[in-house]
Length: 386
Image 1 (cartoon, rainbow, N blue to C red):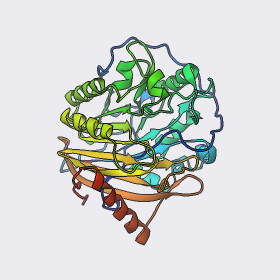
Image 2 (cartoon, rainbow, N blue to C red; image 1 turned 90 degrees about the vertical axis):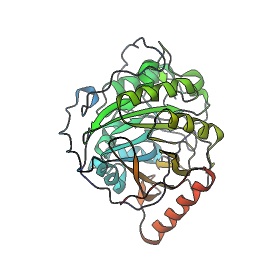
Image 3 (cartoon, rainbow, N blue to C red; image 1 turned 90 degrees about the horizontal axis):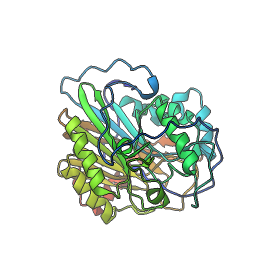
Image 4 (tube, helix red, strand yellow; image 1 turned 30 degrees about the vertical axis):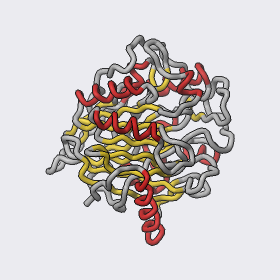
C-alpha cells in the first residue's frame, strides 16, 4: 500500500462526495484481461478475514509502514467517480503514470489513505447489459490508480457488471491480481461485503463498499452466498452486519457507497436512512458518489457523512448543472475513530475530463458553494482541519 508522508495542504471547507451513474457518451472498447478464478462458497454479509496490514493483493510487495504521528492521527482522502474511456482513455498511458489523474494526484498521495470509485467493468469481453450506458476498461486502470496515489478502489456501483457474466469474470480476475485493494465486488457475498482491513500509521482501518442504486446491476448482479457480484446497500441488514463486523476488527470504519439521485444536490430519504443505520453500527465515515453533482457533507453525531463527491476523472459530459465541480475531501481521524478535521481541495473538470485544482477567487467560490450544499442534509459542520 502506497503511503505518502504527513500533512495535507488543502483548503478548509465542508465535505463532498462523488457521484456517478449511467450518463453520457458511448464508451470505447478496451483490451481484454484474463479469465476469472472460480467462485468460492460464502455466506451473505459475513466479513472475510482481515487483509494483512500493509500488504497489497496480487502478491505485490508491501511498502515500509509510515511511523505513527505523535498525536496518533491519520488522514484519509476521498474522491469521486473515475472512468478510463472516451476522452479519458488516454490517461492510461500518461507519462509519468502518477499524473493520470492530473495535478490533484498529489493531494491523494499526501493522505495516509485514499479511496475513490472506479465506475466500469474491467474487461474486453462480454455482451453489454440492456442499459443506456455501458463502461469498460483494462486491468491497467488499477495500476494507474495506484501510481496516482490511490490506495483503495471501490467497485460497488451500477457499472461494475456492464458486460454480463464474462465481463464480471474478467473483472474479478483483475481484482484477484490487482496491485491495489478492490472492494465492494467479489466471487460471493462474503467477499463482496468484506472490509479491506489494514494498519495505517499504527491505526487499524477497515473499509467497506456497497451500492444503493436501484438498477439492473443491483437487480441481476447482487452477490449471493454462491453468486459473484456487487455488495448491495439495498440489503440494509447485510450492509449493517458488514459494518458491525468491520467495527469488531478496526476502530476506524469507512463506508464508501454508490448512492443518491442523479442531478440532485440533496440526499434522498434512502440515503439519510442508511446513513443513520451505519452511524449506529459504528461507522466513522459514510461517503459516496453517483449523482454527477456534489451533495452536502458534515457530521451526523460522531459520524462524518459525505452524500456526494461528484464526478472526478470523467469520460464525457453530463446534462446536469455543476457536473464539472469536483475535488478531494480529506479527513483527519484519531486512532479511536474520532473525526477531528475536514479539508477540501476544490477542482474543476477540464475539457479532457481531468480534475484540475482551482485557486484564488475560484477556490473561495467553490468552497462557499460546497458549504451551502449542507443546508438540505440535516448535518452539522465538520471541524476544520488545522
